[in-house]
Image 1 (cartoon, rainbow, N blue to C red):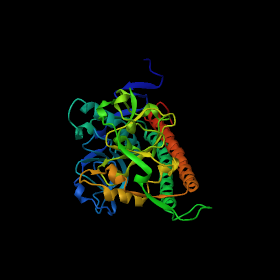
Image 2: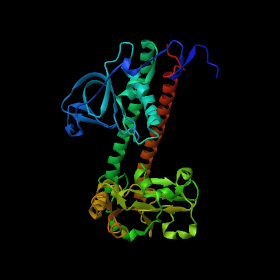
Image 3: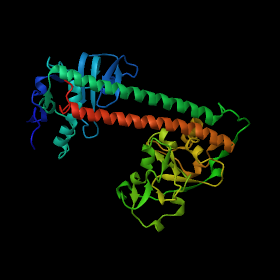
Image 4: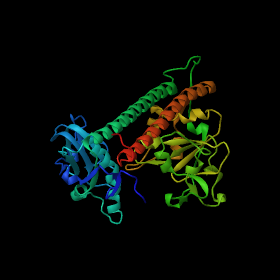
Length: 406
């Protein structure tokens, strides 16, 4: 391929002719920490960097200044990169890169290192069981070096993008918290919408739903061929309280078996509620999803699921997405859950859980308020994804010199 004028081929790829390249060991000091995970303090005064993207707290600091940190192991399970300029401490299996050479901007280095290093490590460890980073792997990594003013311009442009993304993430968190508070008040009657009053009834779920189990199949049996299949793990992973079969059809795992092997009770219809019957934590015990399936597409409820099919018209379809999320209902799930490492709940016990039954018009009104809030949050999340994609594109352009700011 013919090189564009003003560019050159190097060991790090095609970069502008006026950029240099150098090894990290010539540009930064690499050290490991002296702390262990048990040293953390949830109320600590300073950031404590461990082998995770989560930043813990600690009541001491061994460093004060600009640094980039990355995990020394666990690279096959996740990317861990941090930038800080201040007081902090770090784990004994975390690498600190600091004391940057005067020709290197620290944040520019963080951007390039965090964007490129993980792929290098994965290619080096892909054919082995090694899941750790050795110091020489970092030390020998080459990075491109524009003139420092251009590094700073790149860093500032991407900082601005990060600021926009962080602000949007905070707004989404705020909106979610507002929705959570509104939901708890509306679904428990602590707050009533205008025009509604009177006493609510209370019914056990067994009076409203008929419960049955799912069709057992392992994750390994699923593919892109066959009938839609709802695995309990996908309920646990979902951040939504419903699944729209028609809209999400392409992304739903499939099970390729004759449909006659599946009982009608395990086939999901519009408005069915599917609960998990096992969870590794209390919060997951009440995890569930409401099915939207207006075209009656064959959809098999799977392993470790409990299917709840309405026997009455007591609950509005949209209202079902929210009515099981109150603290009171979750407490009832926790009460009936059994097990130590894994919490389980049975069809019999779910049937004993009591739920308030509101007049149909009030259910519809509450569902409308909450679904409007969900729609606003979803729009913000789409915007966040777009901003992140734009930032990623900016990084590819700016860190390779394809787009120049100076």
